[in-house]
Image 1: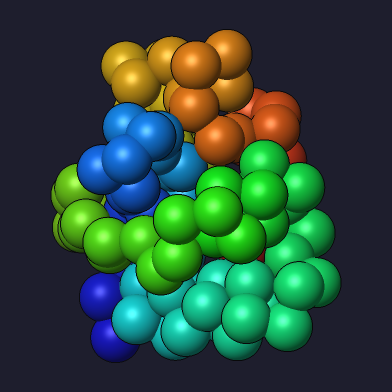
Image 2 (image 1 turned 180 degrees about the horizontal axis):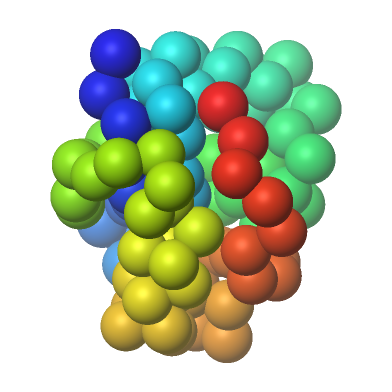
Length: 96
């Protein structure tokens, strides 16, 4: 169980999604499960998956649970992943 910040990355079309989890491996599996069924909550991720397939998982930083929201905000800003990436909005709350 890895607690931290991760990215889903598609080399083509060079798009990234930034997320947080208290179990990155489990969260990645849930992303894949939803994408494969065409029901991912994030329409941007679903569209890129439908066109380019399974993304790479990159653990960006391992951190404490209490640090997740602030660290995720920082990476979303660093990667500009709302405007030029696949995040729809900023941090809402800590999630699994």
